[in-house]
Image (cartoon, rainbow, N blue to C red; front, side, top):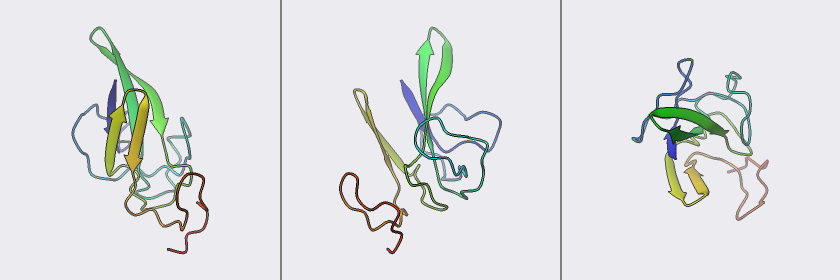
Length: 107
């Protein structure tokens, strides 16, 4: 498995294991949303790929559950077994913990 971050500038994301500048702008939320919706300037995303032989295939397109512009949901990524964590240092919600008040952007 390979996870790459932020890359819908072109028709398909660049497969890379290195950091890419935050610039994915889809307003999609959750998993496998509409990658062509560019209403969330620099919201960020992560792409999960799997490899069979010499061929890489995109498996999942990941977005925050509360996507907003300039959240930079692609700042950092960690993978452990079947769990992926993606950092969004500019996410503004006042929510804390799991299932917090994610829609409250008062921060």
